[in-house]
Length: 84
Length: 369
Figure 1 (cartoon, one colour):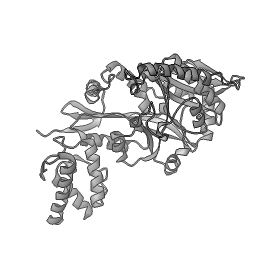
Figure 2 (figure 1 turned 120 degrees about the horizontal axis):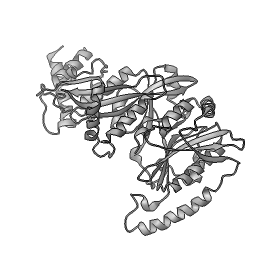
Figure 3 (figure 1 turned 90 degrees about the horizontal axis):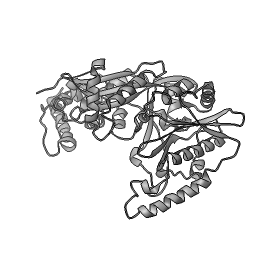
Figure 4 (figure 1 turned 60 degrees about the vertical axis):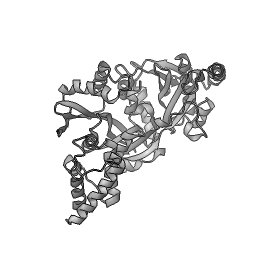
């Protein structure tokens, strides 16, 4: 996968997190989102819907695991692998 | 320090953890900490006559229970076919475990072949919605205020004297409205412990033959749902013709705070006279129970009362009127959703006009105070 694409996706996800989760605080690519309890259940659902709408991907049940959602990097990798 | 949260099936050793979890997740629910009551509810759920297993899962964070979800099986008759669908219930997770809460629901949808639920629109409905159920309809909400003076939104000190007069007026008008309906129909109160005989099976089969989708309310089910051991004891009204044949029944309950609920009202198909008589009997019962408001949430059908009969008895439908009516609880809008494994059943079940459904048919009503 192209590094540029990965970075673009990560930036979009960071923007969404800043707008919907952290307020004005920026999120880093390797900040832990789940193991620190940052995401509420509703924000988790909204994030999945956002990924679906923004990138045209459909997260399957098997992909809905902590490893794929714990950091912006992990989410970006999931998204780019599905768009590939 | 990173957490290791494990999602696993519930085990007997998790009972103390789930009992401690409930009041932490629902601090505003006065019954949340009633361990004996919650334990009894699960014993009762375990006696459900539906021949399908209940499932439960927990979120375990290093030995501490931080989340829980149960899947309760309930039977439906959908287009002549018996369908068992699970309903998520007792869903809870501590703040900070949002992702895992969604994972719990995902586990539910993986385990349950079919799903049916009647939820208050809100966060849980949104989480469930992620897994693909179709919204059938919002339940109609009929409300009748009996005592304006005790209605919290109106009972300001200034209005209280006026409200007392208004309450007397409502009572006087109701005295006329609920005069014996005639038609020779006898409405009586029956003991839920012993009344559910085979005539209730016949009534259910008659209803199921006239309505495409209906919860399977056989005598065995009703005995379990409303008989001894039910989480919240109820009163049962029956309507019978002059020959003593069962025309329908109604299940009513008045909470300790004076909220009256019609949990269920089913008649033989097309017997509006029976439905009218049961409504009259219910309103009389609520007056005697000193309820201040009556709430009836349902999907209209040929085995339910007609809207016009409810309006004639002084019920209003807040969602359909201009402005805010006394008794309206728009935040408590209940929505029926389904995701059935059989495509033909799903196609039949997504049409609201196919349904007979009452508040008491869904698991949400198991927990009503």
